[in-house]
Image 1 (cartoon, rainbow, N blue to C red):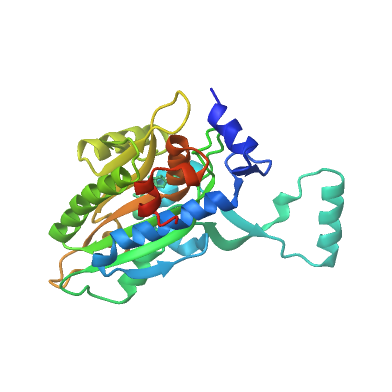
Image 2 (tube, helix red, strand yellow):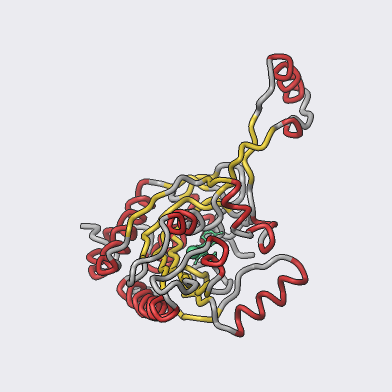
Length: 301
Ligand code: ATP
Ligand code: ZN
């Protein structure tokens, strides 16, 4: 793989290596661009009157289990474990570390799982409130997400920030939402003066059964991705996703519309780090030299 872009990001001090592939530290310039994108997404969604929800990067194990993530993506999940022993166990632990032995086997589950997608914690919260209002609901959610997919590609993080708008309502409301955001997502990226294409996509379902799931997802066009060329000599990178879950999450959590029908859900997800890297790839590392229109869109001054 040609890693020229990655090497330049490191050499310019934009990304800091942590010793683990896909887990990066980020510079002030990177974060300025990130914050500009965040605010631009907020402006693009102002009319949605979305309820804002922000979550930490871990979620309840019980919610995670019920979401069915392990059925579809066991290879990507990360669980949290802790030391719960007494002083004797502590001495054993320190001895194991000193001798370079496996000390993790005695760690206990902490009832926490790293959040794999920003929208997962939203559904049980909305479900708990009971039947939806006539116009359903829109949530503006963001979270750090974890996916165990170590890679040398600078666009494939193991821990990254995802911002989403989530629509919960009738089939008509949810389908209209996804149409709107497919348009808006393209306008958003066009305003950033980035080249892109929109394509039907699938999630990385696990195993042989997963192949069928992926084919069905594509055949029904349940997922679209907006792709931007970012990496050297590789396929374009998915920077936005437009997901139609039909009744999957509403069935799981028991969400009903005002008419008592099963609700449906959809979400648009923005990959924040990928958007920052796409901007740097196409406009360079020096924000001051970026096109005026892009600087305006991101209010970079
Ligand atoms: P669903 O709700 O159906 O699970 P989602 O929208 O919550 O899907 P994805 O579509 O898988 O989740 O991801 C959303 C966005 O997150 C992607 O478009 C991409 O920009 C970003 N993303 C996904 N994986 C990574 C990664 N490994 N590193 C950086 N960004 C990523
Ligand atoms: Zn989502």
